[in-house]
Image (cartoon, rainbow, N blue to C red; front, side, top):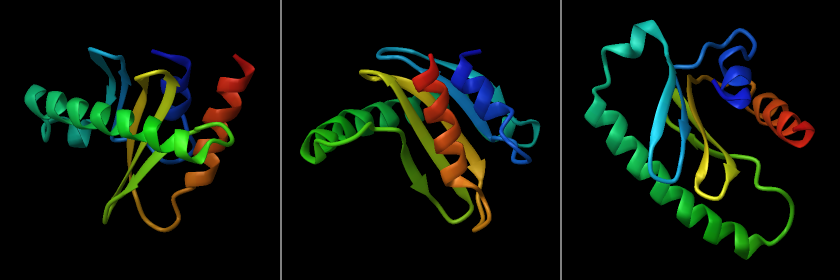
Length: 120
């Protein structure tokens, strides 16, 4: 498992729903929590991968408009799930999803992953 995927999997009290390493043309599921494993098929994972990678391309374009600072994470908030994409190289990174409520420590997770990446 990648270093970032390990950090995400072991992050605090919150266990992730899914963690995956995403590459420019492939992906590798690193962890699926037991209670959500049966909810997703290989086709679901493949479709999610394609959508995330398309979003990553547009995120790079958006990043160039901002032009400042390091791009640490893309975050999507749903009613009860929060999704992260932590880029590592162009069109590569780590995907993670967690159950979400207002108490989830979003900033702490982004900070911990960002610090690990700068140490590497």
